[in-house]
Length: 348
Ligand code: PMV
Image (cartoon, rainbow, N blue to C red; front, side, top):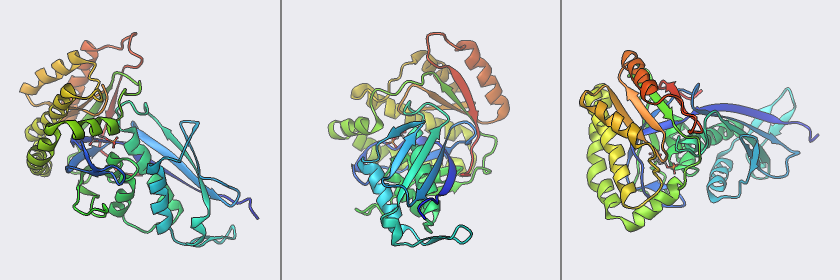
């Protein structure tokens, strides 16, 4: 019959880059111009939950994000779906009498239902969690046998930063050399247990969608600024080596210095050209910079106004939270004002 349906549900946390990906050498395949390093968060606080379903009754691929149907016609979704279909294997459920062969997957359609437990497109890397979860859940449904690194190369084509959410802990996205992107993959540098007293606080000051997407921001800068090339060629490679050392040795002062330095670099680019980093809360930034003398905390911003603070232990995090709440109590003018404490984690 046509009434059966098979489903898979997965949960994927977002990740926060401490050495940023900024700038693409290939727009379609999403190949970056530098390596990047991130920390994957705890899914209890910032994650995407996605259920995927396949049934002979489905006549199109369809997707709902936070309850609203969204189009899958974009190139990025299509690239992910095509890659996954081409790697699918036979799926059998003997109890239900279901068999989907490798060949069947070419014409079977899927429904995708996805929820973010945090503001979408507000610079909290919702696309990272979202696309990683989409690829991971579909790969399970379709019995794709590739390992996480190979899956990361597929997620990368959905959203660059998504490739890093396939792993927990500390993750490096290697830019790769190949034109087809086969070596532009994520690898785990250290798992979530490696440095388990790091605490991540995200000060969500706005849930509004950012004005400029990361994609258009990067494009402007690559085309118009020499700075971004200088950053990719001269600055980031050294920082990557130092950051890997800092993580390996759990050297918080070095980790904090590098994290803060890299976010400032991206912000400089912002001042020169783009609006992507709508850095609305200068007051918060100044406060955070004043914490820098004593490296108790590292801060970093992605493509939005929300601050990510990384503290080297729980005691320091508690103090930091007190100060945050003292200086920035919930504000009736802000559409959202909350603090999320997260740990590093693994994919569930
Ligand atoms: O993956 P995208 O296209 O949303 O770009 C993300 C870029 C930053 O978050 C600003 C940096 C990074 O490395 O995650």
